[in-house]
Length: 462
Image (cartoon, rainbow, N blue to C red):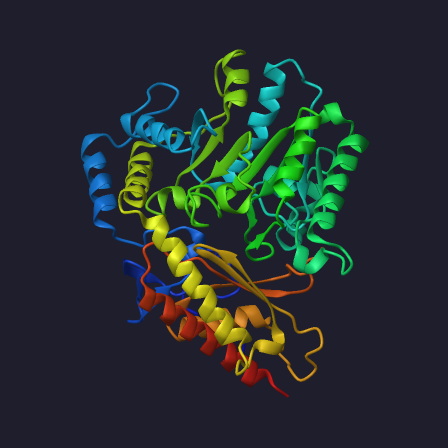
């Protein structure tokens, strides 16, 4: 019997999982009520989305008021006040990094829009020969064909590999020091090796054919919350600047407060602002589907001095209800100084994970390869390379832990394949709780997670 086989029921939905997920019927804050009567604690915000949890009264009221006032207009005919106000908010809080933005309905759409925007920018300024993007191995930028081409998530790319564009999307090594920094390298030497690799890729493609270099500020789904080494983003941007290309950041998961600062690059990206940035999950906090593309003055001027319009759009772009929800979420985060709590509780969670998983009495210590992250975004990677005494059967350790945690009342994400370039090795757990979480709730997360891990290890011992 698989670890998830007990979650079965009739359904007309073709789900994304090998098991049929339980049905949620309600939620309050970080707690979700299931149809089977259980109340579970969401320790990962769905997928690093629900930054304020569910049912925040100010957000709900803003959405209700907007529905009563204006539910929809089409963005090629009319704008709307929530969209205009949200745009002003995003620009005014960027400390000069961005001068304009556009809205979409989620992370994949945001990154697809980024790809098109970069190409449009160079067409507008008279450099139409630029046609190549460079991203990184073990990255994830979305589930459309273009964003999967930009990504290098082996498992998610595999079913569609014959459809992916390998002529225009290229990849360099990940910035993953724990796995790929050489034993005799300093951090500075490792960064320099990665910088040279990127420059060599520019040169091999033709420097004036590259649109931009794209990276997640903190890698999310593929490897499980992997920050880059110090100085990395400064070095990568220097290559882009040298050859006139765009420096582009994907902060769909790590942005809008998740790392303890509004933008992840402020704390985990050498404080180097990008030319273009995608945000989504923490923007609207799950109250409505929304994402945004943030543009620097340089990019905005290139467009405005050319055609003057964004040659891209969707039916629900700038949706009034979604924008009102996102504006309310951002106002709550700012007015209640919630990012301070993100930093404080994140440090507490890290200390509890270190004790529970790597401490002298921790059953998981021999297998806990890394605990990493910051703010409200944490990853735990496990390595069972030499664990001949353990047998997890056909279901990977990370999936077993995810299932056991849910049985014990905790929602987490377990993923595999992030420890080598082929996507065949590795188990990791991701935690991304709501920004307004309490100390007591953090302790509950750590307790249940450690219990889940230890139970699975004991059961797998042979």
